[in-house]
Length: 335
Image (cartoon, rainbow, N blue to C red; front, side, top):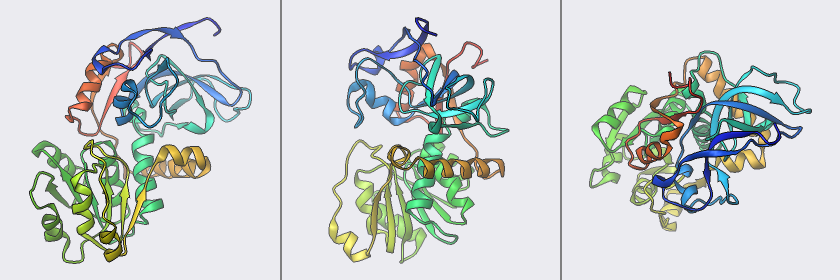
């Protein structure tokens, strides 16, 4: 492959999303512990909006190929990879480099696509489902009968969390900001759906959860939601922070944490994969089993061709997404 070129979304400098385009770049080199993938679909995630602007907490060295995760067909395996073969259908969370015709992914970052999962769904499966599972199961210790509050519930992590929490026997209170998004949460199995635009969110949560409040909060949005949800958390509740989709990082009041004897826990799948890859792999294996059992249903609301990457990112930025947005990389992928 030395000297070969491929099409990719390359960030040569930090620039607005509207200026991103596809160009030729060299194919990545394969090492002995990695796998070369012929990419079929990639999936958009929040960091893909921030990385081109230089605003994400991880700043790859310029130039870099954008894209956190994708799926495709194994083209070649490194010498140390013995459990995969060319032709295998795989999905990968690499952290960058996925909006490209070829990906080289370390073996521990990928998995076989479960039977019955479609290509766009597989492209967007690992990050959102692994984040939701790590949050609810590893950190939140969700049990049957728990009341789980999910903010930003119509997005990728939110829908994954609804499905996982219901599979664990929890009662799910989902929050979303438009009638369409609220209906999507109901369709995914949420027991109660609240309008996130209500003036007194704490009262609205207590009104449906009861005086004790909710046992677990999955906080995807941040901003004003964080304090209002903490006020409605049950004693010994777990408040799980996965990000700040609102764009506003909240200041958490220690007195609320103290009075509720609550735990506030930061959740990062990226850091779990880097620090404890075996645990990340076990979680992904369980998620694949849950999919095969019918508990999980990846939801893709739109598919864009690679040469419309700017429009796809703007679609996500404008918060019009229910579930995930996929990018068709190969010419026949979107057909």
